[in-house]
Amino acid sequence: MTEAEERYYSPERWQNWLTRVSEEDLDLESEDTGRLLMNVQNDAAIAIAKILAAYDDGTLDEEEALDELSTVHDIVMSEPEFEEGGEEAVMLIGSVQTSLSCAFFAAEEYIVAGPTELEDDIEAYVLAAADAEAAEDMDAALGYLVQAGTVIIDGEKLDIEILDELEFGYVTEWVNGLDSLQSGLSEPEVVEEDE
Image 1 (cartoon, rainbow, N blue to C red):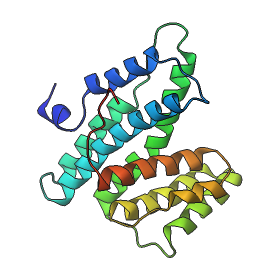
Image 2: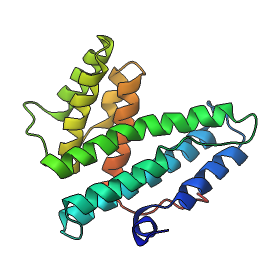
Image 3: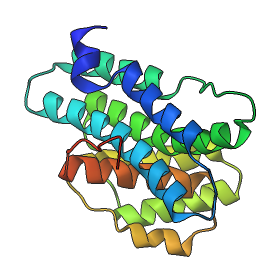
Image 4: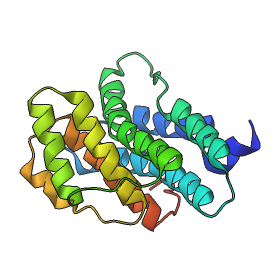
């Protein structure tokens, strides 16, 4: 394992979460299952936040930050493997991965181009993304949220209650991932795997 993997995120850490998910009696309606999945997601988002913080303070240059981001992305987005009967676990981890995908794209965009100059507030971009999803233009939907994400990374606040106005879909999952990143940027404390 490289020093970078140990510093930001490791395959072992991700595998520990997968093991924890596989050992859990998963229930989509259960608070415990929801909390576990949120911890998995937040833990990975904190790794993204730490890379962004290291980039912002000059510890990492652009190329190094993108490499670190790519390393964490490859770990978190790898196909999860569970024992037989783990279809539900695969589906739930897939949901976490979907949520985090937008956070990764936003972080990459921020490192390469800085925060986007939005023409409106963040919530307007979230609503525009929802409209694009309704029109089945997923590239536009993701584009709006990536732009909003760069501004969140820069310190703007996203009011997560906007999700109450939206139909569940990719946009709500992506916004959920941006919210995890927002939390990670403001409180970059590692989530303990036994929480």
